[in-house]
Length: 164
Image (cartoon, rainbow, N blue to C red; front, side, top):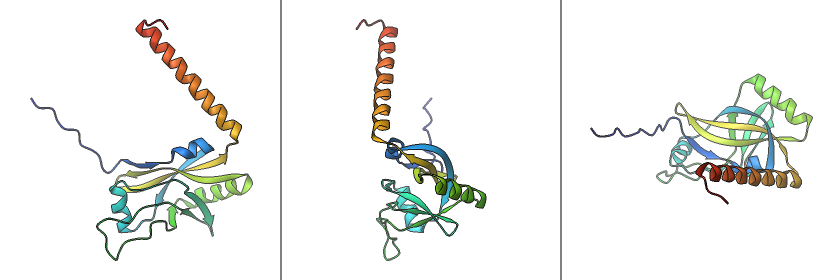
């Protein structure tokens, strides 16, 4: 009997992640927000073309806007194509926006996009409330990761019976 092929679920997939955000910031809390897009933008996203690098969110007049999200023009588009780095509106509930406004205003914090993904055919953005890391914090994180990596290697060697 032949094996069944696994279906790739196009309605629930990660389009892009912002790995640098977790390196440069302490992520305090996260929210899921919808993104208002044009037709050619969603088609370009489904092709897997998007960059979250250098993007951030701002709060203006009680609305949250995503700045510098780069979605290249759709390859099959014509005069209807979009501007690649236009400002895009994020969709959140009013009480979530109000709490974010208070948290951003209170301290030295910013809103950083962490992940862009499809959920039931809709584009969602994982938005993080972040506080910048100092250089020594980054060095401590790198040191901690290398120590954890060495410990797991040593445990693996002991389990396999290799003396090092």
